Image 1 (cartoon, helix red, strand yellow):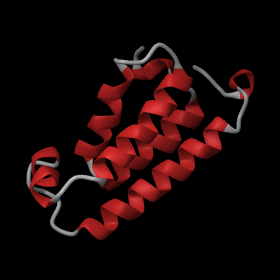
Image 2 (tube, helix red, strand yellow):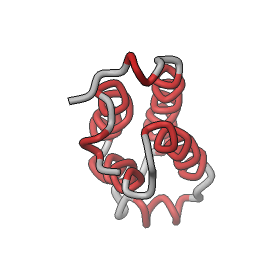
Image 3 (tube, helix red, strand yellow):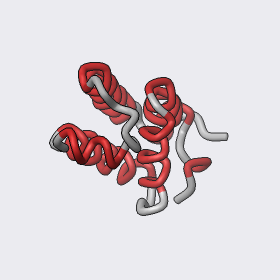
Length: 100
């Protein structure tokens, strides 16, 4: 699927929130959409990606963020926010989400 197929709720809660932190983080979540059939699968994979990023050591984080992450506390705070946003979107029935 394309990121344009995501609901406004998912786009705002994941992609825009990730972009607020760092463009490279947003790109990780944008690329994820290409491997998904639908938004529900995307939300599940987004939670997996959040957990995967949390498990990375400092060297691996440098690779993901091209050396731009020196303080992980703001990253982990953003990941917490992203996870909470995913859970909020999952509570909204698909038929009640807003699509362009």
